[in-house]
Image (cartoon, rainbow, N blue to C red; front, top):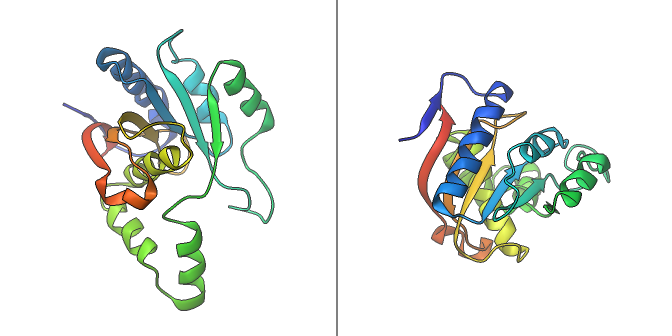
Length: 183
C-alpha cells in the first residue's frame, strides 16, 4: 500500500527517497532513477543510496530548459553523484521538447496532450514515466522495473515502480505500483 502525502512539494523529499530506496533493496530492483533540476534532490538521494547493489541515475533538465544554452544542474552535484558511483543523465525529454515547440508555433501537440493526461495523476507521476523512457533511450537501463522518483516543482514527492521502456515503445511502459505520491 502506497504512502499518500497531504500536500505536494519538497517537504516530502526525505520520506519519498527513503521509501524508494528501501523498496529497491527489498525487491532487488537494481535501478533508482531520480529527477533533479538543480542538484539538491540528487545530493539528498546520495544520503539514502545503499553501499552496493543499487545504481543511482539522476535525470536533469535538458540544456536550454529555462534559459537558452544554460544547464540548471550544478557541476558540484554532478561530481558528487559520479564520485558515489551514480550517473547523471541530461537528455531530451520525450514529452516536452519538440511537443513544446510545436504547441508554441501551432497551438497544439500530441506530446502536450499526453503530458496533460499524465498530470491528472500528478506532476511527479508524469515525470517518473517520462524518465523511464529517457533512461532506456540512453541505454542506461534495459526494459525492466525501476524505481522512479520525482516531484512537484522542487524536491521529491512521488515514487513509482515502473516497467521502463524506450520512448518509441512509450505505450509499453507500465506503472506497476505507486509507492508514494501527493493526494
